Image (cartoon, rainbow over all chains, first blue to last red; front, top):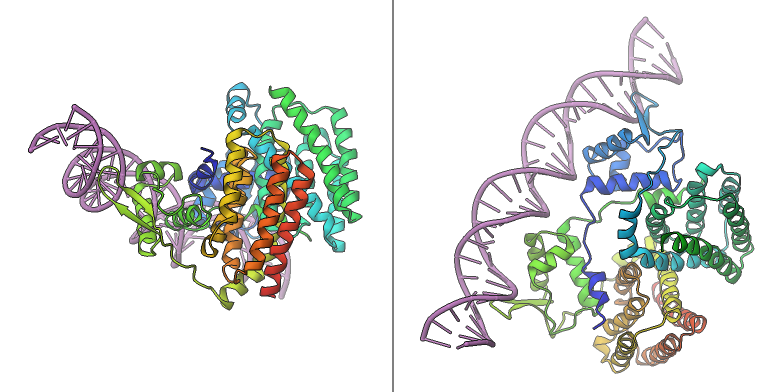
Length: 239
Length: 239
DNA sequence: CCTCAATGGTCTCCCCCCAGACCTTTGGAC
DNA sequence: GTCCAAAGGTCTGGGGGGAGACCATTGAGG
């Protein structure tokens, strides 16, 4: 019997405790470039409300990120919690964890990413974009193409997320952010090559141009080629 | 500023309390046809483990569904919790709630559904399916096409879910199940017409044929046309 | 220099949820 | 008829998270 739907619908109601989930969320914001070094996070009271956790729990999560070197808090008016200029380097998680992710969910994540990203590109190209949205895409593209090596993954993620944003669908944006976090963990195990980055930048440009031109099919096509590259890279290194 | 990504990443860590989430999950299983009338749910101990909630919480959820007329429990060996043969009719939630969903998330849900379902159709057609998977698709198709009016929405959902299943990506299946629940709530407000069902069945057949033939682009195309119909229907009735 | 508003930091009380042991019912196997 | 395994039903103790009040710090503005 093909009862995979059972697993889909009877999957865990919650991944972990609120503390862990909150940490993950804040890391998501930082690692996907939604907040950049130097930025201030929203005030604790507001952030706790938005995340639907208590302020105590949020503070514990922030404390954990402080210890890990991601953020720093300052008291007083005009204080707040700020993202560090120097982010900690992602720890290479070798064989062990990779093997686990590989066994369970590499294909799963790659399939979902393919569906979401190509769909987002097409949907974005199908809409009439506002000037602000067009600017946003172009700014993200420019930032990515001029990024230093150490910042590349983060700015790349931010660009892809920007495409989801301009579809106007928050759920789609969330889903893309989630699947990207899953894959970035694996990608961190792979060395970034200058040559790959050049290639990537050209593809990014093609994708954004197609979206700005309102050409859904080329946008999807360009995205598809772009993803194929990363996928091949991942599989080659992990298999 | 276009900071929609902020909302995506700082969205609530948890939608409600474990009880509510568990009820939603069980309803999902029933309303999307993952478990059908007469079926037995997994034993409480096992189900609680899979959902990652305590048995107490699960039992409270089951109790709520019993009160609502969805399931019935029997003690003793070979007992268990069974889905009722006569499911309660979905309550028409008129203007008020619809307006809320409309304001917030109709476009959101429709965009995400479009991306997920067309992507799933394409991904499914791109794979080499096992005999079991092909049978599964054909069985779901047959059941939907011969469904009575009262069962149509449920079997229709089950068929679409089956397409997600045969992509081999559990995450994709989960995402589709979630978005479908959101839309079914709206669809329940719209009367089902015999004519629409006929049309729908023809489209279903085209989609499944394309998937079984291993034709990704036609599968996507057929799905796109199919979704356009429902979307037009929804918009017409709600706007 | 003083004031004040905004922000992080702390404390207390409470409730929901969990883990796990134990009880009860049921019907098939022998 | 007896036994027992598998299922639902019940109880108790403990811990994590939440709500909300309050404290401490800081820097801008008057």
